[in-house]
Length: 368
Ligand SMILES: Cc1cc2nc3c(=O)[nH]c(=O)nc-3n(C[C@H](O)[C@H](O)[C@H](O)COP(=O)(O)O)c2cc1C
Image 1 (cartoon, rainbow, N blue to C red):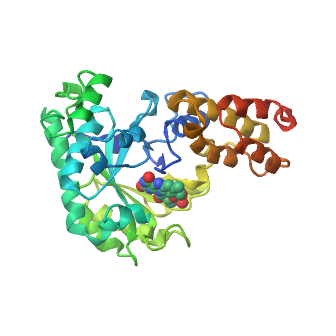
Image 2: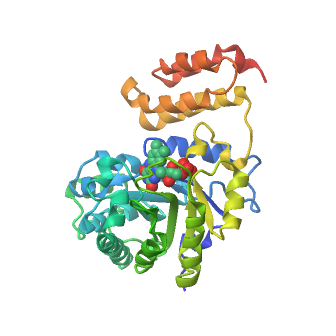
Image 3: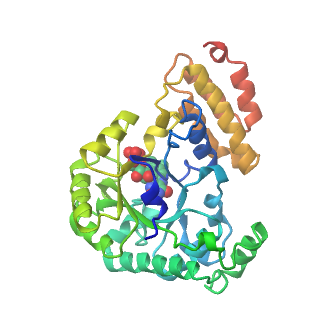
């Protein structure tokens, strides 16, 4: 039987969690570069094992808008990489799968965990936990799409907006047509979600999701109402793992929430009998996370300059484009003597060249 990429990944799966406004291609590439402590070799699995894009709206894509395509930018070295989408309209999810397949992603992830008001009050993200029938309809629409794609249906035939079909064709002339034989296995479908809406309903919610036979589920150990407060409930994650092992062991299961070190990631995977975990906030200003390296202040500053340069090379220049890079600069420049003053200087920088100049002139940078 065909094995999807999730089943083939080395265990434990240690992935970088999707984070809107943070895990863009520049940050993901920084993590890939710096989470290797030694030269890559055949014995060493790549870390992080898997990457996700920031989420984007399926309804925006269905309307032919260009902005929702931005989070789909990635580099070939980022494989395996999963595209994450949110929304409520099953037909829009169906069409989004054709775009994701044409762009060469390794999987499609449906966001059923976002608690932000702009997403969940419209019933999307974690809002879908309250409408399990719609959640299942969406996952079935994605499954139907991946089967149709593998059978040779094109993006245009699937009703993808003509502006987006034209954009895809410009990027890669054959991307919107039938896929070649090597791409004919249906793309795997995953879900990233929470324990419940206002209280944990973990087992009931997992059972709903399993009815659609997802290839992977990631569970963040909080409810929607908890947002990011309190502690993630790993016992609930453990309960979900036991249920999935029993009901559908083919579904890969990842835990998520508050992991603060590589050791913690491995320990939680073992303790709760998981396939692996996703790590989010512990990677802020810490692209070394998955290699376990503890950077010196000088290495942190060198990484800030490198990240800014990579960001500009990918997304272009100008103060408005550069603005989202500033939070990363703040995170790199933290926790060492003199970091506060330097951080203020970096916050005023509007380009990679300015960042480099500030760092080159910083006495700390010259220290080992
Ligand atoms: C700023 C921010 C943006 C996030 N954006 C997304 C997103 O686009 N998609 C998603 O599934 N989760 C998103 N999350 C949730 C994280 O993927 C993760 O589930 C959560 O942060 C808990 O993991 P952690 O404790 O390791 O950070 C976001 C979290 C943060 C803090």
